[in-house]
Image (cartoon, rainbow, N blue to C red; front, side, top):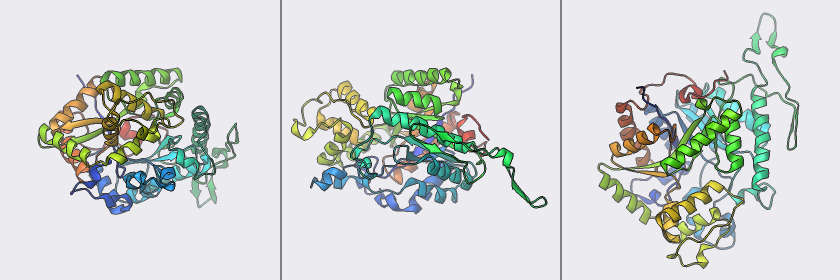
Length: 440
C-alpha cells in the first residue's frame, strides 16, 4: 500500500508564541534581521520542505489601545516585522528549491500591483513564488488606508473574489512563448500572444497586460485560509493550498471533505487542492521534557499581554471587565477573522478553561500543538495524514532558531525514515513540490 506523503511548509513569524521569544536561546532580533530569515530558509531547504511562508499585518496588533495609553500592546512581539514581499527576493538568492510564499491582502492592495510583484518574484526565484490571499482581520489596518473600519465581512470576500480573478487574468495575459527576443527579425514579442484583460467589474477596472511575459509557473501558487462560508467558497474556487486552524482530527477531516466537495462543484480536481493544518511542534528529547518546555514558555507570557491579544479576536469583548478566573462568556459575531473567534470558543468550551487560561493558551498560538519527542510528534502527523484529516501541515515553530532547528533536524528525519516525506526535491517549481495544478 502506497504511503500518503505529507506536504510541509514552514510558517516563520517573529513572536508567534508570545512567551517563547524570552527564552535564553531565542533570537528576537530576527524580526528585522535578514540574516536570520536566510538561515531559517536554508534550514527548511536542507529538510526538503515545500515552502517557507510569511504572514503580514500592516498595523500594530493593538495600535488603538497604545494610542489611548494602554501599554499592553507595547509588549506584543508581533508588532515588529518586515514587509514579507521585501524578504522573498533575498531568500530567492540564497536557496534553489524552497518555495517562497508571502501574505498580501486583497483589502488594501490593487490587483495590478500585486500581480506584477508576485510574477516578478516567480521570475527571480525561477518558479517558486506563492501568494497567500487574505482579506485582513486586524481592524487597525483599515485606518492606515484611509478608512475608519474594515468593509463588512461579506463585502470583503466579494471584493477579494473579483480581486483574484483580475490577478489570475493578468498572470495569463501572456502565452508561454510570447516573448521571443528574436535579434534576426527584430521582433521582441509576438503581439498575437499578448492579451489585454480589459476587466470592468464592481470593484476594479484593469486594462492589462503585465509588463513581463508569462512567469515560470504561469501562475504563482495561491494559498488561502478561511473557515467562514464565503471563505470556503473562495478557497474551493481559487486556492491551491488551504490553511486551517483545526485541532480535532474528525473536524479536520470534515473540513477537508467539505473543501474538496466544493472544489468538484467548481469543476476542479479535488486532489489538486492541498489542505494544510496549522501545527506548532514543541520538541524535547523525551515527551516529559517537551511538556516541561511548553509550560515554561507559557509562564513567560505576561497576563496583560495574553488578555489584550485575545480581545481583537473576540468581537469587541473587553475581558478586563470580567473575572479572569471565571468562564469564557459568549462571544458576539465579529467583522474580523471568524476562524480565530471560533478557535477561541472551541478551546474554552472543550477544556472548560477560564478566560485567563484560554488567553494564555491562545497566546501560545492558535494552532494544533504537537508536543513530545521527535517520534511522538511524527506519530501524530502520520496519524492525521493517514486519516485523511489533512494533506500536510503548516508548521509554526515557537521561536527561532531552536524551534526551527528542532523540527527541521529532528522531526523531519523521522518522517523521512518512515517514508512519509521526501528525501530529495524532484521538481523545480513550487507547484511541483506541492502536486497542485500546473499552469506552465
